[in-house]
Image (tube, rainbow, N blue to C red; front, side):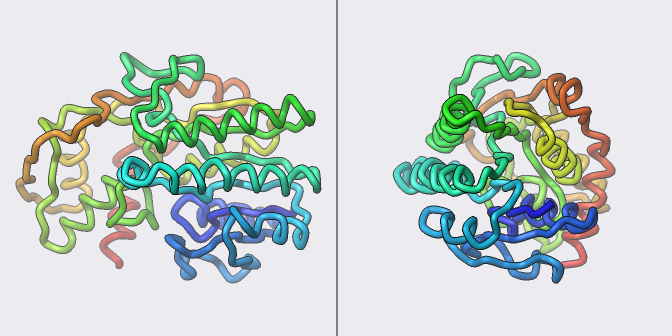
Length: 301
């Protein structure tokens, strides 16, 4: 299969590239390298440097892919609040450009969306029909992109799929970014810093290992449309996360507590039942196993 991976030099995208190459696919990485790293791209992939907002037509015309794994995005919630127009330009307009390019070549799109940022507060594992109440422009832009994808499916008979990820963690995650608390904690422990916990640390998230996310992403390429949660249905508090991170690192250090951040979700957890029944997918990596593999990568750096 000939595939394009937008954001293929990034955290999740580069793992998707690895998996596609491992099964013998022809893989093209489409990335502007604003956050993606050249060293993440394996030698077997062909690189197309460019911006999805202006270069999608050119890249798709060159490659004519059967499938596009669309992971390029603006993912920082704080940036989305400070610059909502910038967030919308990349996440909505950029996705439209990918959709338009894909339409010309009959390319199937698997889109990486978000669960927690779209659903808002959860009172238990949220299924795909949970009320949608994003608290930040980032969630709004991802939801808008999902709606465009669904509209293209209806309008043109396409079979694009949207995946709502939980909190993804694992090797290659940026330890300096907003989205990677596991990597942030581990990097601070490695460098002798003090991890910071906002609020009382009881807020929960659904952490899913990047290898499991890749498996769901590849499985979705065989699905005829739809929206699917990619999570574990397990809540982990920040306090518990920090304790387990310390165990994985073999380092004990008292954290610093800071005031709670305005607008932060208190509970976010996904129900992946639909993905299990339709995609034959479920997370297989235990949290402690995944933390161990992430620490091995962080400590080696």
